[in-house]
Length: 325
Ligand code: ACO
Image (tube, rainbow, N blue to C red):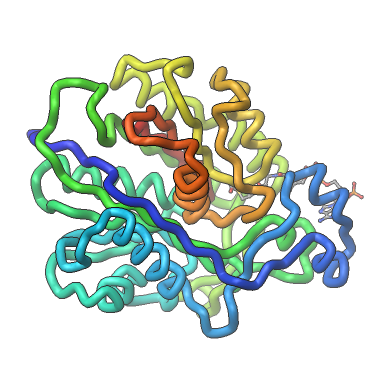
């Protein structure tokens, strides 16, 4: 039985210091700033330093979110980390973050849904909090996609970047009103028939190597724009809200054309769309919390706003969350 609601009490993010511009990529593969900018909207992305791991990025973002929440790490009893680029095959990078924060209570684990990882992690944490199992959750998206890119493949290496973002959720008594703050609804989907459209050609059980990202770009594009609306319809159906009620739409930051296409199909006005893809590239599970934090820091997203999150990624996986911020 649902007795609680998960309220967002803090958000933080982290980007590695090294910036890789489109001009830098021209020296690496046969491409141009104009091609990348026109097809994707990306002009630069951040790349983790040698030895800087996904858990390091996640730890920075987690600390920033805890600071924003003014919460001692010892209050956290659940960490869910969305990542497709963990430090090691095991243990989960979430336990490295847990140890880095000095937390010895509760539970920490990773969720693997590629670019949908943050929304999957949020829905997972929300369900635990709603049911009273835990009190404070850190939900993190963190990636070092630079480590699984084929830097000779111009069709993929120009698209991605590294980074991390995190939010802190607190379980509070469930109010009756949708106007009260908290996660109002989440919806997750996957369809494994499309698992070969976007994948990494390695892994512990197949090649014994980490492998490189491979993608059928046009099919991914089509699905990302046209095939993911059911999750958004589901969160609207569960809450009674519609596109016109949304204050801010924060989609996965894959590509500006995908973001524009998805917003247009949903009927969300361009001025309500948060986009950071130009400066971050596609940071997979980190992209939504990075975009959230940017829009909080510049004053756009404020407490009480109705925020729609939408993600899509390899699998295919996709999902949505409607949050009264
Ligand atoms: N620079 C210059 N030319 C390039 C590059 C590049 N970096 N990459 C491909 N090209 C060339 C191709 O070789 C092709 O040349 P050809 O006509 O001589 O064969 C031409 O550009 C057109 O290639 P297309 O693949 O047809 O280009 P398209 O318009 O489909 O754009 C893109 C490619 C940007 C990858 C697009 O398909 C896309 O955005 N797909 C979605 C992929 C995505 O965002 N994935 C992220 C992961 S998925 C997720 O996060 C949900």
